[in-house]
Image (tube, rainbow, N blue to C red):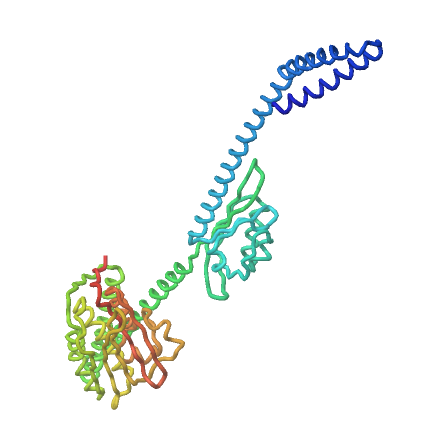
Length: 436
């Protein structure tokens, strides 16, 4: 303000002095009057400057100060809003990134304005540069693009199950919702729920029911046929009747084994099985399984060797369940190794935090195409051979679930005509908790 008053003072002084000079020259005043004119002008300049400053400059200064304070307040509020907006955007991005569902937001022009990380893997998107691009250019799936287009066109939410075959078979439950502003569509939000595992479980359940029905129907049909034959007169022929009764007994035993395996597997899978964990030396469990299988091994003229690493720690196991798992593996090795000259080897050693137990044979082996499904219920590589040998198709599945209940894992390595090696990995550092 001082600078402004000083400038105003100089301006007023200059104007008043010029005015008095012109008046003095015009009036022909003597030179001595010019001093009076100067002093009078100087005094008038001071008075005029103070009056103008009070009337005009002070309000202007106050207005300027108020405007500066207001602008400063606006700047602070804008900074706070910008910070809050950035925080909201970061929070939204964090939430979207942490979601397991895929999310895509598309505006009314069918251009992508938001997308989260899971979508790239779900839909196998090739480019990360997707924002602002048309959805049909980024998403190479006609069903998804049609669904988004219909939702935008009709301005209504839609839901559809979409299957993607390549690069791997996947199923998604897709929900598209509209975002409206004043009854006008601004965007649509598509949420992708991966239901591939649910589909797989449903397919496995369906296959299980079909396989179980077939496995139960086969011996029942045979038993029923021979019972009817006996009723129709075969009882009067003792040799034939005895033969038929032996067949009935064989299929009854198979049916009983199948039911027992189904009940055992169901109990383990449903967590209803009563597991009794205790610290047990591994060699005692393997020895019990070998002794129980010795008769079948000798009958098939196989040789069996057991080689366990020294000083293996005792494991927390359910004795009867683990014996069942090793019995199933030994039974599998005996059945699928041709009689005479077969070699079965059991070995155990420490491997990381596990004890690894291998049950190896030199039998017919398994083709690589069958290995991913070998532990599934009722899955058989050679269905005819398995049934002929009395197998139920549940043995390896039972092994898998028993080992999983012990917090372990199973694997298999096999080559056709060279044999198979089934491996069980059991943890020894932390005792497993019983299934809930």
